[in-house]
Image (tube, rainbow, N blue to C red; front, side, top):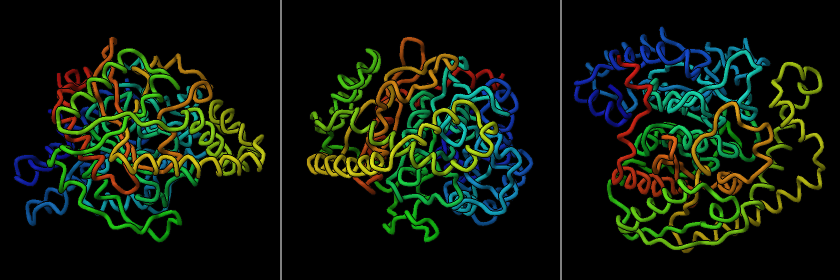
Length: 465
């Protein structure tokens, strides 16, 4: 049987569910599905069972120390794990074993979570899907012939398939929200600085975020509670108090003001008809729940995407310049060709992009003085076939995720239906900085009012046969 984190936590606290049995069930699913889905780089079954047994002893003696105590989770393979290989899905780091944990790894361990292993990504959270690396790309559990999105691909696949109950991803231009959308789960990019990035491989220092991925918005709230907070060892870490993200989840959204950035997905990058219908249906549901909905206009999506892509390429190239020059063959083709474009960006252009970023962020802040949330598409439609993803996809059309990566505002992807091929469709919600609680409350209200969380990928019944 598959559980959400919140469901499993309640049963574990009531001593009606064993962390050991839950972990064994997840491990069995990993064994059966991993040859098809390739969600893991490094499974850690022995460690998982050891941690589950320890959690069970502690819970039986003293009760759970957090809602994550005894819960099987996975980590995108860019987060350092002491004594466990951390590869960033790259040949460059095939044998890299860190001596210390990343900040988020430390916090999950402290919460009592069970580490199931390290999950597939796009190479250094950027180049994919790649077929010339030591490990294959992750596959979509709704249809393994289709793309997971990226770069937190393995986390999305593992959560959707029930291999883990939740996990962590990183998001620089949509790398949590894109795979969450294509794999039909919930994914949250918190406010820039809300979660420490210490011990995570960097892509673009001024745009990297770390956040939760799980089956529901409530589960994302539980995960965010465990990992949020100031870290003096991360220069970008914010010294903002951490609220109780679950406290008001059930209060509903009556009176909430929602602004729809309709031109993003109806004109700037027109979404498919299935997605347009699904968003209209979601907005109708939010109105029925008591929210007011109106259109909001921002600068064209192309402006946000151009500034963000230029900054990301410049900063990403700076991270990898030495290795790209000395050992280019150690990278996969997609990563090498994409990030190598950063070598040709002039300093004046980078500074111009930073200035435009400041203008755009101020524009978004101004727009959000009149609304509590912004709504847009998360993806234009269902996941494409994995063998049909163009190398230069991100250069062809502007992405819906980039505005909120560029501004640093929190944003989430949640499932809002299914397309003609039976693959998930998704809605993107965004809030003001450090107002993740409002965003999660709205996402939870929508999920609770709709049927989408009751529909799991077809691979799950096959895993129980």
